[in-house]
Image 1 (cartoon, rainbow, N blue to C red):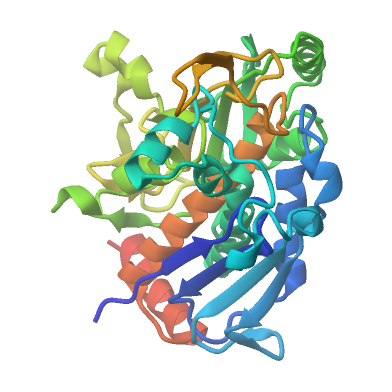
Image 2 (cartoon, helix red, strand yellow; image 1 turned 180 degrees about the vertical axis):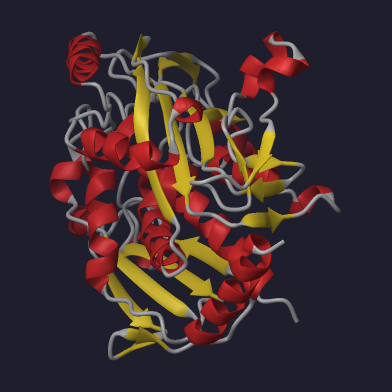
Length: 396
């Protein structure tokens, strides 16, 4: 049976907490809560985040699958406590005796899952939908993604991101124009920015735009890029639609709340160019390079459904958060009367955080692709298989 990585998340925004189960990580991977904590902190940071981030200080507790600092091959279970649960213990209680302890939500918010979800699942209280559709769920995705990142790091693979635009203010950085050795510097500059933008002057302008939107009770979206370096040639496949790695990555990133567009490499820009202007020509050998290589990366590291050895570059667009203090018009589920849509505590801008979530989803897809390609029930076996393949590629 082919090795694979599977994961599930569970939990509501104001429930007791979030649970994640991951199956497929080989035994022998060093793992602790400290490996997960940095990305959870990065997800909570960024100028424009709301009051919830002041309440929650997320930390993942490892409940199973790790013994004495190393994975044992069984499913890994993570749990993140919702510190705000103490204010919702009756309102989100599983006990029938606590029914109607808080008022029902009957005014669907435009841009959310509220209306479609309430109708689909036959709920008279929209809270049954908004609690799970909330982006709070992404905290567990980030935690699981951190485990996947730790696994990938054993093979020399690094994943990062940076913000390129917020509210129409854009920087000049584009991953398709960066050399492999330049990504680390761009990432470091982004990490020092409140909006995770690698250009300081543009960061300041983005912050101003966010502050203006906050004053006006509005929200902002933007664009970010995720990059992956150190990938081997041949992850994914051309043989079936669901094995193509760009398709799997696109689905994963598009599944993040509020993401409305995904591009790989040059993406839509290719549609405006001649074929001779967008293909990455192939070279071999030379004094510096070993084996096959490219001088350009317009394809974003993926061709024909497979990684081609160049850095993978994914660009995604996030819409403005639809929960506005400047209330939008809506209609009550039952009276059918017009109302101003209900307001739930929210952010002004969460683009920097969304980029961190996209890193996690990218890591989860690629970790699964690694396991499918190289297998291994223990880390030693997986690394041995990987090195044998790497030697084969280098000597082809």
